[in-house]
Image 1 (cartoon, rainbow, N blue to C red):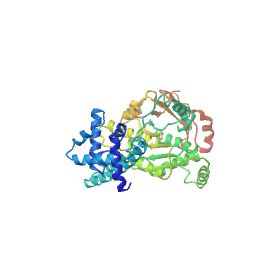
Image 2: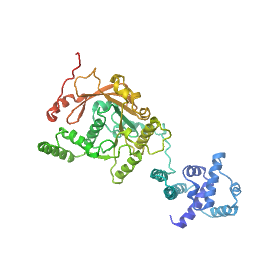
Image 3: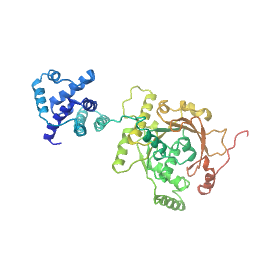
Length: 451
């Protein structure tokens, strides 16, 4: 807006505040009096807001005039308001839309000034980021949630077509447990003891999702992005991860396999980004994801490896690990809402959970914080149930929490290939057997002691 428009429009906003209580509520819910250039309009705004909060009515003009020492300025404002020939009822949509845009711009400018003050007082960059983010998120348009009966048809259509928004793992048995796939606005966590395949199961889920056209983003705090990429090289090529880079013959097979996948139509994309161990937060993820969005790259699902190696970008009161890890889990779940995608991460079992029988493990054994199972929508625990093992290369999982599909306490298994790192579910046992000829891995039966 030009300066002249600004002068006129603030008076038009003031005129509307005096007659439209819904407008006053909407505007005062989001914005502050400091955003108005005209101090009399700012005073009218603040007084009307407080008056309505207390008495649930719009204030009379006489009360407003006597609420300040600058009576002449307020009276002059009223005279100028009365001279504006504008129907605020018929033109309500214009006033609301323009007010929102005008004050959003003012809020952003104020946040920039506040950021300078933070720098001058030696504040940290996270404070600046939060101030700017808060300003950018200001909006009079509010989501009133779900009108259960009013949106009945729309809601049921959305549920009936849930496969359109869920991201399957393309492991048919696992997808059955989660009602077809991971839905947006959720945090799912897979837990296991050290070296039990937590990162690997994410890599296998991601590998299949890419082949089915999904854009996958994997953010790693444990391995470098090249190290994680090697897992995908092996999974896609079905070659021995320890040999495929040293043998000329296997190098050629690797290049051939990956080139064929690259040329595949309707293939999704995979983005792997490394972050410093223990030094990255959801705030860093957010910056990276926005950079992707700017480049028209819309992720369908996010993987984070892993929760316990992250830090919170907020100040967590208290030194206990429960609060810290729970806070990080909550921030990750909030990220799923911000970008409208499912977020998948992993965590570890504590020492006690690593030593009890797998059939007795539940989410009370999650390392460092009970806050992870409290916050997550889905939690599965990986391990080996020796009483049920048929083959050596089996990884079992227990559904410990499941808002996605409702089935809790059930267990199942995945077969895995120790050389290619590929994983197969129960329905793919025959494929797993046949692939041994490609990977060179064995399929030995599990031998129990004193059998």
